[in-house]
Amino acid sequence: MAEVQYTEDSIKSLDWKEHIRLRPGMYIGKLGDGSAHDDGIYVLVKEVLDNSIDEHMMGYGKTINIKVTDHKVEVRDFGRGIPLGKVVDCVSKINTGGKYDSGAFQKSVGLNGVGTKAVNALSTHFKVQSFREGQSKLAEFERGEIINDAKVFKTEERDGTLIEFEPDDQVFKHYHFIPEFLENLIWNYAYLNAGLTINFNGKKYHSENGLLDLLRRKVDEETLRYPIIHLKGSDIEVALTHANQYGEEYYSFVNGQHTTQGGTHLAAFREAIVKTARDFYKKEFDAADIRASIVASIAVRVQEPVFESQTKTKLGSQNVAPEGPTMRTFVNDFLKKELDNYLHQHADAADALLKRILQSERERKEIAGIKKLANERAKKANLHNKKLRDCRLHFNDKRGDDEKLENTMIFITEGDSASGSITKSRDVQTQAVFSLRGKPFNCYGQTKKVVYENEEFNLLQHALNIEDGLEGLRYRKIVIATDADVDGMHIRLLLLTYFLQFFPELVRNGHVYILETPLFRVRNKKETIYCYSDTERRDAIEKLGGKPEITRFKGLGEISPSEFAGFIGEDIRLEPVILRKDTKTKDILSFYMGKNTPERQEFIINKLKVEKDIVKEEPVMVES
Image 1 (spheres, one colour):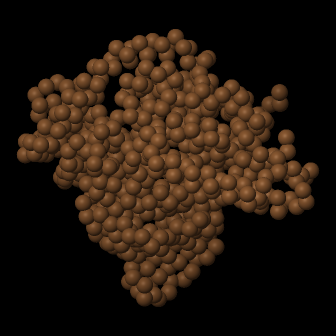
Image 2 (cartoon, rainbow, N blue to C red; image 1 turned 180 degrees about the horizontal axis):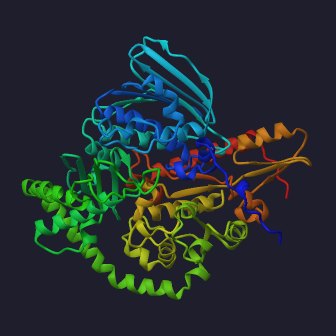
Image 3 (tube, rainbow, N blue to C red; image 1 turned 120 degrees about the vertical axis):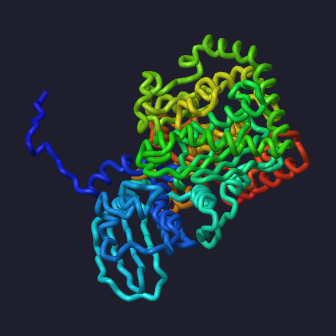
């Protein structure tokens, strides 16, 4: 083995943009193609928006205009505008920005002066323009390199800042913006800044009631046990209720930042809810019974917040201010006073909450014995060898590497041939496979008791490690991988029913996906094109010309492992399962998985007509 020389030449110094492009994960988290709500392209949008929001929080600008097309983002605020002499430095010089001046930005979202620099470095084209007191300064960049440093000129535009950028397709491969993810991001900003108006692609986003509006949008009010409790104090706002669902559902924020992984403020909130309820009812209820079926949101303002990563998804601050109280004391004191007062003043809500707690207590005790037997069965089933082919990251219990855990996924598939193809072609470090035995049980309308009584469901929840909540979830993405035929679609619906019925937070938190695999392979002697739709097939035939060989893949098992590796590797196509604002889970499950109503029969017949028309229009040539 040749000796590696370690000399002065081995020491490298990178400038700001080179370092960001070499290690983008340090600045924006994971990259992704836009199929996950926290993929890098959304972080870029957020970093630009954060600056505009901070201006609004300081009292400058009540409107923000946002326009997003396929690959371009424009954000125009009406704040003070970046000081003209520092426009270039603010977007291209690390550790430069107004947020180091604590007087100007006491409770800002970002404090490290990195955000817009990362956006600049990771964009094929980046433009910044400041409008300030009748003058304007414009600068343009390509991948962080300045290409236009214009002189200051006069303008009649209102004060503020305009930023335009196009994410670099060399970094974010095959990326696309999903409108629902952008809309959710923008709604959160509106809820946390009551009175602010955000215009996004021609639609107006505005909230007057903050977190109360947020919960109204997130839950079906018909399922609530009591009206949403909305409490506001100095630097803290809370909204909470209980619904007819399983699990706990939280939305937490710090200084306007959506902390999707929670942190010290959420931990304090969950603890304070339990303590307040126990004190009010003068009974030591089990914490799980008090929080079961809760839907809640908390927003706090913190001086000099400490986050556990640059993407600010988890708060690490122990105190609300350098010399202030602990987060635990701050949140607990607020709830102890305000929630206790509310329950005393609203007897109906207090009675409804007590009934919900007692119901959860009964349900927990009813399944205690079944749960114990089910857990013993799961151990005897030897999960790792029989049902689950785990990834090495978990099998070797290397849980300390959060960056690698972000890439973990589990494929849920049916049949030996399909699971065999995925198992042979997967990345054994980060991809696991769970094999179903036939079609899962239709659990619509069932209680959680069925999860423990049904061996398939019990083993699946153990594989995911979600029995006691999402904190122990072993995989970042849960991927349903079924054939693109009637049976495959039915299995997909049965699995989605299971998740939505018993673990809806998995779907709401963006963990559940559908694997897209090609329907056709079109090839000649020189080129092979995989097509995911009929339109792509027609385009491929036109591109290759002549009479190319066309293969119609009927099932996952028909795709060879060598080919399959390309479909679940770097270019994997995943369709996120998204619950939209107007999605009523109960109605959807009832329609698809309930009794065979005339409405559903008509829906199926109409869909069959569409399928027949497509086949009639252009028959598919299939090569064996």
